[in-house]
Amino acid sequence: MTQAPVAKFDTLPPELYLPIARLSVAGSGYDVKDIVCVSNINSGMRNIVVNTPDLWRKFTLSTSTSSHKLGRLCVSRSGSHTLDLLIALAQPMAEEKRVYSFLKCFNLAAPRIARLLVRISHPSSLNIVNPLLSKVELPALKDIDADYDNEVHEGLDRWISLPSHGANLRSITLTGVQTQPFSQLDLANLTSLSLGAGKHWKWMSMSIATLLPAATSLQELQFVGEKGTFHTYLDDEWDGDVSFTFPALRRVRFAKTAPGFMVPFLREVNAPLLEEVDMTTPPHRTHNEEGEEVFAGWIGAVRSIVENPAFALPAHTLKLRQGGVKYTPQEMFTLALFLMGIFPNITTLEIEVRLRIARQKARPEFGGQSKD
Image 1 (tube, rainbow, N blue to C red):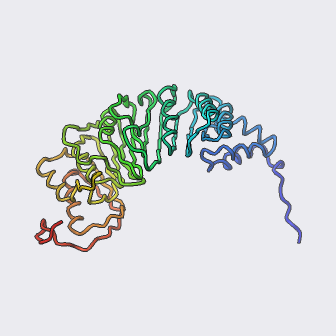
Image 2 (image 1 turned 30 degrees about the vertical axis):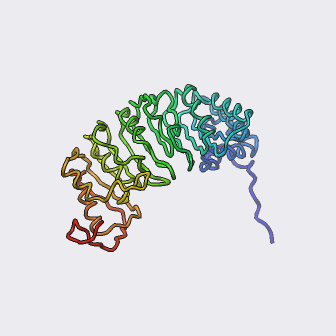
Image 3 (image 1 turned 60 degrees about the horizontal axis):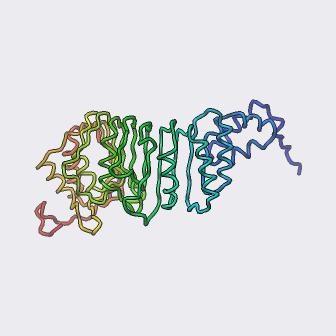
C-alpha cells in the first residue's frame, strides 16, 4: 500500500506562517511553551514569530525558575506592548535564589503589566505578592484578578494589596481574599467589581464597607460564591448605619449568595440607574460562626421591608437562575414577595430555573400548627 505524500512545512507560502502561528497558540492561555515550539519549526517561522511582539505579551511566573527565564524572554520580545501576566504560586517558594529570580522578572515586566492574575494557595505566597503590589510601580495596570485558595488561613491578615490604592484600576476580582480592612482606597476609575467567597472563608463586612464607598464610578457589581456560599462573618451586622450610593451602577449579580447578606445589603443600596439584577436562587437559611440561625426565611425579610421600606431599586430586569435550592411552595411564594418588595420597579422577569419544590409543611404564617 502506497502512502500519500506528506507536504513539507517549508513548501508552504511564507504569508501563511503568521496565521498558523496564531492558530497554534490560540488556546495556550498563559503557557509560553507552545509559541516557543512553533518558533522552532524552521528559520522562516522563527523570524516571523520572534518579530511579532503581541504573540509574547501573555506569560506565567510560577515557582519554577524556567518560568522566570521564559518570562524574561516574553518581556524582551513583546516590544512596547502591554503585558498580561499570571502569577501562579501553588507551593511555597522557600529557596532565596528562586525568590530573587521571580522578583527580578516581575520588576522587569512591571512598567507594562496591564492585566494581572494572581493564583496562590499559601500564606508565604501572600507575603511575596503583597510587597510587590504595594511597593512596585505598576503604571499600566488596569485589571487585577486575585484568587487565594486556602482552607485554613483565617484572620485579618488574609488580604491583598491594591497597587497605588487602586487609583488606576478599572476592574477588580477578588476570590477568597479581601482588601485590608480600614485601608484608604482610591477607586474612582473602577467600573467592574467582583467579590468571591472561598471554600472555607467569608468576607469581613468591614472590608466590604471600606471597599464599596470608594467605587464611585462602579457600573457592574457581583457577589459570587464560587467555592462556597457568599456571606460574611456577621451577616446581620448591616444595621442601617452603612449605606451605599452607586450613581453609575447598571448591573448587580448575586451567585450563591446567602440571604442573610443579600437582604440587608440591598436595603442599604441607592442605585438610581440600576437596570439589571441577576441572581441564582438563594438558600433560605443563613447561620453564623456559632451555628446560630441569623436568617430564618423570606417572611422575616418581607416583614422588615414592610416595617422599614427600602430604597425603590429601579432595576428594569430581574434574572433568576438555577441555584439547586429546594423550596417549599410557601418559601417560593415568600421569595416572590421579597423580590416584589425590594424591586418594585421590575418590568422584565427572566426565569431560567427548574426549582425543586419540597413537600409542603404547615407553617404558622399560613395557618399551620407546626413551628418553622
